[in-house]
Image (tube, rainbow, N blue to C red; front, side):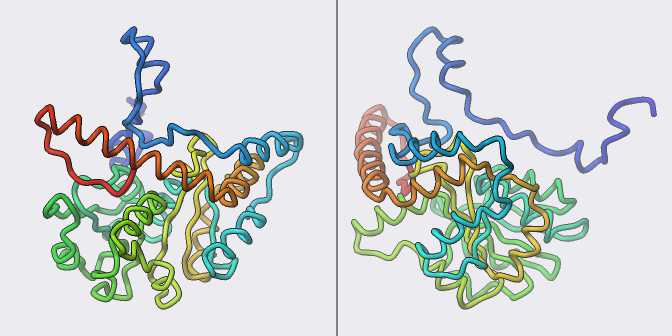
Length: 299
């Protein structure tokens, strides 16, 4: 081979690069001023004190490999969502689960569908699996559900989406609906203020085999640095996804922190409420400067 690129398949060489938000300390070193990072939707209020205590306790046993299936967390999540433990798959962040879904269901000649301006990871994992991503234009700064439904073909295997109820019945059974609810705690808060139901996703999981809900502990729970996420879906499908998961991918500390964080409902509530106050303040100040602000139900 003449070049190192010759080792790498063409579809991998063509991948877009994920560029994360710059770390605060790096930005401050480069700029010489104090920075407040908004780029990565992190929780500025930090994790629950209960989670920190659990992580410290778990650190005493990190000489042992973690539970490969994170069974303690699975049981807690199953009870929390009213499903069976077999309907829960724990992964190292919901991003890892997005990748697993793509690698399991996609291949050359197949495609996935999502909306433009969605999470760039959808494009990266789809192309890495050899598939093609169909990106549908947005409508009114949101998902154009009619256009997404129309873009589905016999070769479509996955739809990445963050809205469901008005859409799910139009999706054929050969397509997996990956419902990304990373910001569900915030969405539920804003929906309650409007006397609305945020999502019926768990009900759809119980009714249909082709729906998987993606959740994370990186946002409202403040555990982004530990990388813990999970999926809720059909047990048989989750067994295939589990085969594609890296062994021991969720650390002992990550599982312990997530269990404790989930139980600290007061911390989650305060994080979401304080976040909404910040949203109101920042939105007003930016509008005063002449910016058009898209309403948010996230952080």
